[in-house]
Length: 66
Image (cartoon, rainbow, N blue to C red; front, top):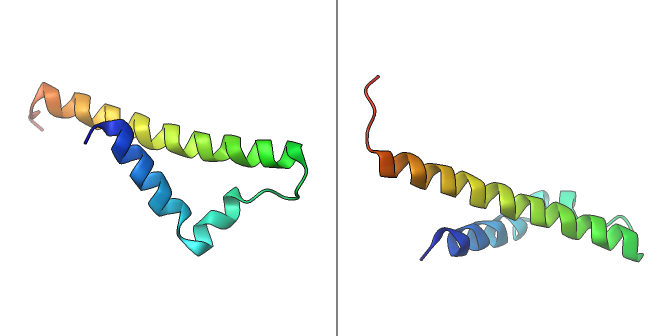
């Protein structure tokens, strides 16, 4: 499973939580509100994907001394 698939699964899990998904629901049924809600969901997915990419890059570099 690659990072895109993992990001998708994490976003789905997040959006399946009743209390958390409220922030992503459109304010009304008009197109502008639906588009805005879709953009927020896209931002969530992209944030998860970027975090996974950064973690993968950090892991590839190996351990660091503290």
